[in-house]
Structures are given as C-alpha cells and as structure tokens.
Length: 102
Ligand SMILES: [Zn+2]
Image: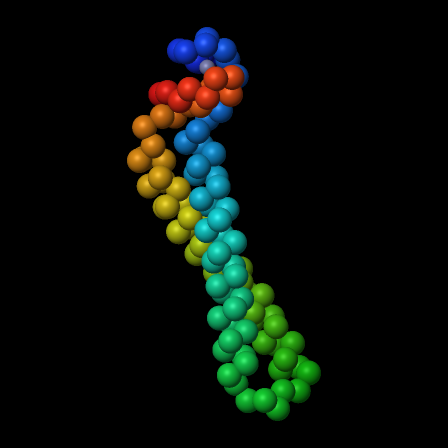
C-alpha cells in the first residue's frame, strides 16, 4: 500500500486515472452534441415539405449521428486525457494534506 510521504496516510487519490476518465467522458458528450446538431442542421436545410415517415427517418439519423459523434468524441477525449496524463508529473494525490507525488 502506497502512503503519503508527507503525512504517511493511506488516503490517496489516483490523480492520473481520474484525469483520463474525465477527459474521455467530456470528449464523448461533446462528440455526441456535435453529431446530433450537425445531423439536425442537415435536415433543417433540406426541403421544408416533410411527411411523417421522412421526418422520423431524419430523427433516427440524428440519433445515429449522435452515437457516431459520441464514439469519435470518446476516442478524441481519451487521446486528450492521455496527453494531460503524460504532462502530469504526479500520479497520486493525498486526500489528507493535498500533497501530490509519484
Ligand atoms: Zn499527505
């Protein structure tokens, strides 16, 4: 068990792991929003006379685009997270005294 070199407590937070997860989640949400909004913008610029069937088709397209965008965003987010993780010098954060260390 790793302990804090400053106060010797075992209450530590894995700093790098959290950064990776946050970046991946943020990328996924951003990608999904971008995917849906671009699909909706596409359908909005298309012809105004839309019958119900076609409209449903476009909504389905927007949802699919959202998922696709989300997957792309997750991938981009994980790369960003990895970059941030590598730039971080400390891997652990002490919950007791706030000291960060490897
Ligand atoms: Zn400490």
